[in-house]
Amino acid sequence: MNEEALDLLFQAGRIAARVKERIYSLVKEGVKLVEVCEAVEMMIESEGGKPAFPCNVCVDEVAAHYSPLPDDQSTIPPNALVKVDLGVHIDGYIVDTAISVSLSKEKQPLVAAAEEALRAAVKFIKAGTRLGEIGAVIQSTIQKAGFKPIKNLTGHEISRYNLHGGASIPNIAIPDIRRVAKGAVYAIEPFVSFANAAGEVVNADASTIFRLDVKKVPMAKLKLDEKALVEYIDENFKGLPYSPRWLRASKVPDPLGVHERLVKTGRIHKYPVLVEKRRQPVAQAECTVYVEENGCRVLT
Image (cartoon, rainbow, N blue to C red; front, side, top):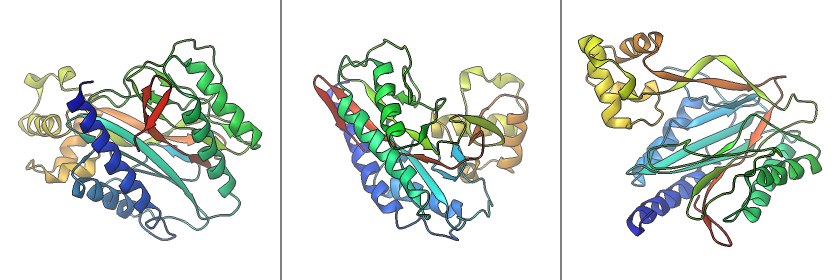
């Protein structure tokens, strides 16, 4: 990246860091999940950034990809373990970060283990580090604390307008000898559960986050309202994930109904909600780093 691109990336990181610190005061028993999401997304915009994806608020065994749909009345239950995952972009330069907040003393050690695993990975990574070795560091740190990593959730390389572009950062030791590159951007995100958990996530029936690849949509075959909504999504989100909540700003009549129709035809990609296989609670910690010769710069 050139200096201008790096400056935009670092600006996005500073915004994400400021917003992240303000999340702790939002996560309270009885608060609606949609209120947390919309507060986070509004803070991002008020700071001068744009959400890189819908704010995720995932409770207990829900590990990832839950962002409330319009009119969702779900609230934070007592003793919940809540993950809040947010992304910020400026002109397509993206950062991704997450925290976990436990309202239960029993689940707080999971949060501590996720945070410690993240610190260990950040300390270890530098240009030339093998991907599998990063996973080994994360796994070892989690297991030493007496817990289990989620083996099929990973961190990821980030590129412009591409949240999951390139290599994945594993959370377990795997024989991946590929090396991280100087100047690359990665989101590192350990996921942790109890020792009796399955250590993997499975798809739930629901999907709350979507993404459009306009190149794969046969525009000539769409109805007028479908074409108008596709054009709105393409113009406003540029291939990044989005929430149906965000479609209310379009001028398309019944945008949610039109969107549902497009999803059913397979013209829009949906991300299934991910839950721990044995329905055990999951904690997450995440930051985005810029890889340097002898270490990395934490952006978020």
